Length: 209
Image (tube, rainbow, N blue to C red):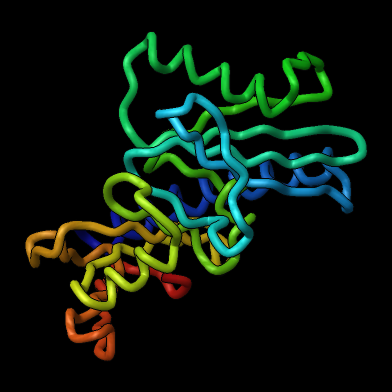
C-alpha cells in the first residue's frame, strides 16, 4: 500500500469516526445533562437482568448479554450489548430483557438499541472513559476474581480507540503471537502475579491506542 492509499484510508476512518461522534453528541443532547445510568448483566440461567455494582461497569464477557440504561429528563436510551452470536429466535427473545428494564413501557421517548461485540459505537464507548473491557468466556463471579485470575495466569489484550481518547475497546484475546499485527496495540500481562506488563504498539496504531 503506497502513501496515497494510506492517506485515503486514514481519511475514510476519520470521516466515519466524525459521524460516530456527531451521532453520540445528538444522543446525549437528547438525554440532557443530568441523565442517570445503570448497567445490568443478563442472568440467562434465571432469565432476568441483574444490576451491577459500579466497579463492574464497562467490564463485560464475550459469552454474555448486558444492558446499559440511560435515563434523561427528556429521553431514555436502553442499549443491549450482545457478546455471543445469536440466531433469529434468540435475538428476538432478548427484547424481553429490555422490556423488564423499562417495565414493559413502549414510547417514542424511549430508544432501544442492540449492539454486537466488535461493533461498539462512540455512544457506548464514551460512557466508559477507562475503557470498555471485554473478557473471554462467561461471567463466573465477581470482577475481583477475574482480575486475580489474570494476575496469576497472564493475559493478552487488544486495544482499539477508533473515536479518540475517551472511547477505547479493550478485548481479551488468546495468548498467541499470531494475533500481533501492525495496525493495533496490545498489552500482555505476565503470569507471575501480574508484576510484568508488556506493550506491543503496531506502526498503524493511533495515538489514543
